[in-house]
Length: 101
Image (cartoon, rainbow, N blue to C red; front, side, top):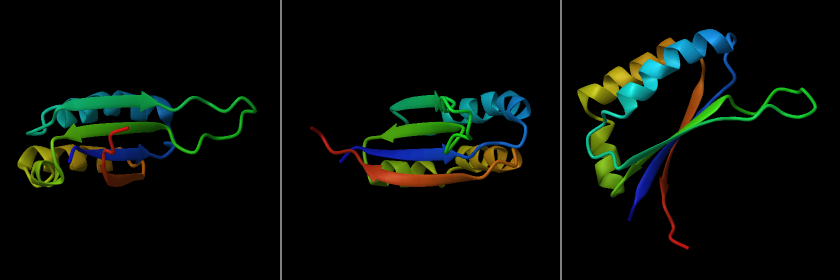
């Protein structure tokens, strides 16, 4: 069953600094073995000016849970996650089966 890894990236303390670092983070993600597709998104600000629930999402698509699991155990995944952690911005990671409609 197709699987995606979703990273929900919290609001950074310094959005401009995060965005400078994020380009490298995303480039590393695109090098993961078995990756079929990447969907990167920046969360819209709330109309009332209150903080958004997150700053960005990053969805990484694979053919299966096994492919996704194998990809995150590679050296390039180590670099990717190390670089993401180095931004200082917390994130949540989810593995999900993609249900076909």
